[in-house]
Image (cartoon, rainbow, N blue to C red):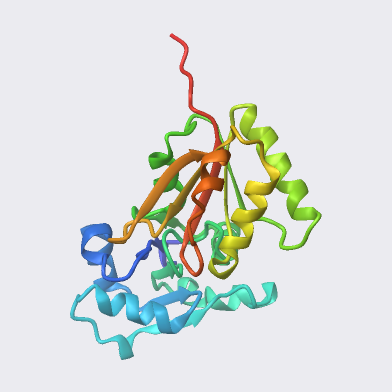
Length: 243
C-alpha cells in the first residue's frame, strides 16, 4: 500500500494542435498545473511552451523538468521518479495528446505501479479516440496498432493483416511519422481491396481538421497530401448492431 508521504503521478494531456489549449484542456488540468513543480516529459522545450500557453501565471524557470524519451535507457527511469518518493506530485506530459499511449512515458507509469505509487489519469484530447469517434467505423471492437513496420515486405504484409482483421469487424487504428504519411497511404491504397473503408483523420482539433471515411477506390481517385501532418488512419467497416 502507498505510504502517505509519497507523491502522485499525474498523466497530463497536452494539445494536439497549437493555440487550442483554451478549447481542449479542461479547467481541472489547468488548476492542477498551477500546483505542480515537477514534470517528466518527452521534450523539455515543447513542454515548457505548452505550460506557458495555458497562461496560468507560472514562472516556468522555477519548474523542474526531466526528459523521458525513447532514447532514455530503462535503467534510468527509476531515478526520474525520485521526486515522487520524496513526497512531491509529478506531472507526466506527452508531446501531443494523452501521455503513456504510443508514448515513452508508459515506462514511468509501469515503474510507478511497481512502487505502489498512485497514478492519476486526467481528461484531455486523444487523437486515437477522437478519430474513431468521427470515423463512422466500428467503435464496439477496435485495436490500436501504433506505428507499422517501415520497410517492405513487412509493411505490406502488416497492412494486409490489418485489412483481414477489419473485414472481420475489428477497426484497425494506426499511424505514421508525419513525413512518411504519403508513402504509408500509397502502400495502403496499393495493398487493400477497392471496397475496403479507410478513415483519414488529420490535424484533429485544429482549424484545418480533416476527417473523411471513403473506400480505397474513392481515395485512389482523390489522394490527399498528408506530408508533415499529424494523421490517424483507420481501416474498418460500418458497425451493425443487432436488436
